[in-house]
Amino acid sequence: MVDPAVVLTERVQAAIRSALGPDFADVDPIIRPSQFADYQANAALALAQRVGRPPRELASEIAGHLDAGQVCRSVEVSGPGFLNLTLRDDWIGMATSELAGEDRLGVPRQSRQVVPIDYSAPNVAKEMHVGHLRTTVVGDALARTLEHLGHQVIRQNHIGDWGTPFGMLIEYLLDVGEGSAEAKLLEDDPNAFYQAARRQFDSSPEFATRARVRVVALQGGDSETLRLWRELVDRSRRYFNRVYAALDITLIDADLAGESTHNAELAQICDELETKGLARVDEGALCVFLPGFTGREGKPVPLIIRKSDGGYGYGTTDLATIRHRVRDLHADRVLYVIGAPQHLHLTMVWETARRAGWLPDDVEVVHVQIGNVLGADGKLLRTRSGAPVPLMSLVGEAVERAGVVVSQLRPELGAAEQAAIARDVGVGAVKYADLSVAHDTEYVFDYDRMLALHGNTGPYLQYAVARLRSLFSRAGLDVGHATHAVGIREPAERALALALLGFGSVVAQVGDLLEPHRLCGYLFELAQTFTTFYEQCPVLKAEGPVRESRLALCALTLRVLGQGLDLLGVPAPARM
Image (cartoon, rainbow, N blue to C red; front, side, top):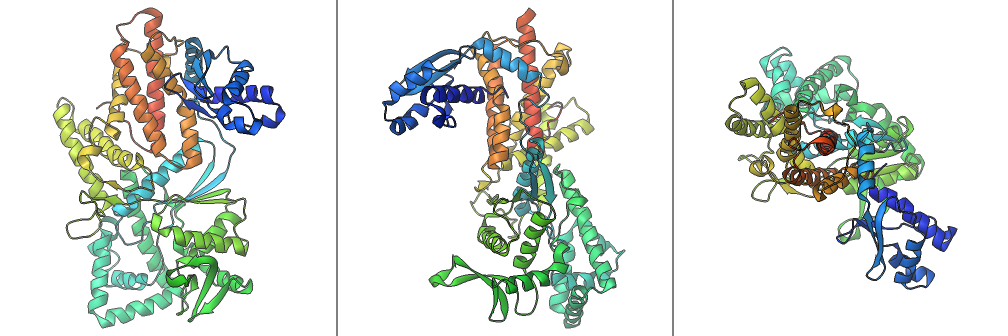
């Protein structure tokens, strides 16, 4: 990796070891960007008390042992004990040229882990709405990024495909006919099908009785009932796939891991928890009471494993799921990309699983908490009727608005190309707006802001990519042929090269911290830095080695922006 921060960390760490001995070999040199130099090392301030010496004196000794002449133009002690580190321009050029020659653009291959990621998780026979946007988009970006870092990602789409409503849904399917237009609603407008079934259930005692009988048949494994249940799931699967295709989501049928997956194991889960003394019957329900989990008035909060009517709930299926992911999938790290309100439930499930011996201490489980999407009024985004906004209509309006802008700005393009660009811009705007804020915070859904061609938006980055492609088209040069060595002559060239050198570390940080917004922030700053470079450093009008060097910088910028957007799942149209 040619990230200057990584190179300087290794050099300063070696200097600390030389100055203070092997006991200090693993001390973090605390390399940070500096307004007075390119970077600063702050380790002397942290070490001063430990070694009993003034920090400036310690910083001077570390500087004396620092072997950085080929990397740094100057090393200066400043303030109370900072080491200011200014890089050599020729080293920056060499490192940038080296980066341009790498297929991975400085992104490391990390030690491989098996990482199941639980995300999206819509319900069968129900429409995906705005509440599914963030889990789907954030989860997919993490899956893409972790795969690129070398991990074995196992996507787990834990759909809601079981429960008492299926008796009602199966009976309604039988009433309308499996080949009817009403049944087709499951693939096009599942809420309409569900609501019609609910109206029939509420208004017809005879239908309600049949639905309850059908639930018993479903839970008892009746073959015809299971066939009808699978028909419901299959039709919903086709609907889900249509949404995923519209959003460029990588989930496929093989990733489905519904609530029904572990039905055969639930009784055994309950028996084992009872045998181990972890679960007991309370008011007719089998519950786990964990130390430290209390509610109002200090009353213990139960994790219900089996309800008083003998049915199983989310606690049981979630325990079976984490056991499967550890035992059968051999997970090293398990991510749950779901809403923040589920944190207490997940924590109780994981603690129960650990006590039962199903979740070893060396397996990391992480709740990637998802915040809400708000409307302009600061409340949960809903339709005028108060229902959650359907996801397809939300994306469709973004594409429609983008289409209006594209037709105004590029009237010379054909209708098909305008539509393709509008689709990429609209979808990219929605996804980037979601990813560019921390996943555990709320944000206001605003079409005008997310579709703007300026600021930290998807269209701004897409435009930067399109402008770079246009530059190479005008140059009559294939991007892959812009391989000249990079030379640093101007401050704007230097700033762009330094920004490019940080790409790999940012991607690694996203994988470690599970925060895609860090990559968004990096790409936005890179695009801004490129804009400054483009304004101050003529490319096509330059001549000789200067022109070749700047074209190489442009090519590398295009590749980094393209790779970064791809990791986020944001499309990059060839032109805008």
